[in-house]
Image (tube, rainbow, N blue to C red; front, side, top):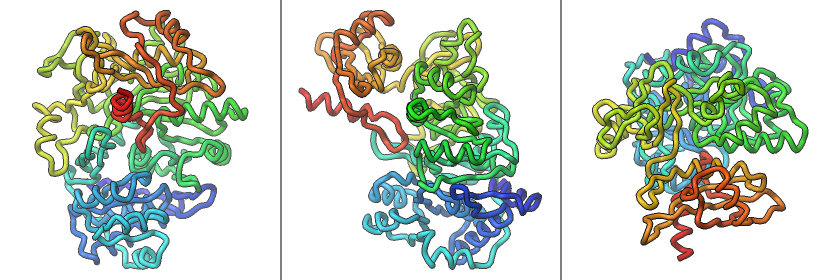
Length: 505
């Protein structure tokens, strides 16, 4: 089934229901949303786009992004969403690798693509070319098989060139329905607020909100600005949004500094990186029980595990802190296993690789059979994440397998050390990596962002670590940095920190 049909059905049921907003301003009802998408589809077909072709979207968050996305699906093509924060050359590489035949862009990005030498047509949604597409005769949405390519998602590429994850219509339908079963309810009076990139997690949740007839709001800034989010939440109410953990930390800091209480925020789903216990405790204490955690990756988008709002906010369970440090339990369509080096299951509580078997998981990477063979083994997706599962099914992710530190033959998980350091009042952010050591294999070192006005005191941080974790796990060196290097999704680039260590000698 073509997941784009969900828009067509909503337009049939409630054509006058408000659908797309730019800030407080209504841009389109569901009837108009459907009509414009059908016209974009008609234009694409007239340009020779065929079912299965790839059409890229390199746009900042805006209502036309959704119109284009559903237009691509209506035409039977697959969308290639590209993070608007990428450099033009990075976007051009994705366009070339995916075999994209048309790219839609927005102001500020169009020139970047042309400067990078993109040779496919580039349609800026503020130009006459796009207006001509919207004036084209609409077409009836084309049917698609469940396993046809719907979304070609390129990984963040923290360790090299990004890989194209092939996401089918079936995967999008299952992830969307699992949202209702395991994450949150969606009602017609809810608001999906897109403050995180719609090319990533935030955009993957648009489908279930379309299916349920909710409203879709893009901030006028096109991105993440805390005062803007608080203002829109007060205006609309019933706000759902997806946020990376770093975004929640920023929202909490701004809210506490300005007296904001988050009026109108109903649900904030977080994922995409480690959420430290100290940070989520602080956020719940300030905003209340509005937070829900999910764990997924591009290869199994948003759909591996979930920790409900009740579990995130619970402080009565005897093991609430351990559960809060977890990423929750398997979502409905998913089987999760913790495996050893050979993929065999390990005992409860034993660390190993997190493995996933589900129709939510990808079948492979785009034109990359070698990488596919390493990642999908005997029907299991090898996530590359190290963690363990307790007797109640809660999965605790310790680290990426490549980030594991082995010192003196003993495994040390950076996240455990980071969690300990973050409970120090003077530490704002921290990232822990391994430094080569001829005798021990690796040493633990920490890059630390101090709170404003605080100076790094290695002795104080050392004493703090020794009060919470084993002596052999404590960092052997601390480096003060003004900020941590991050990619466009807010993930810390530990590869860059390792490069800095090399240059330090």
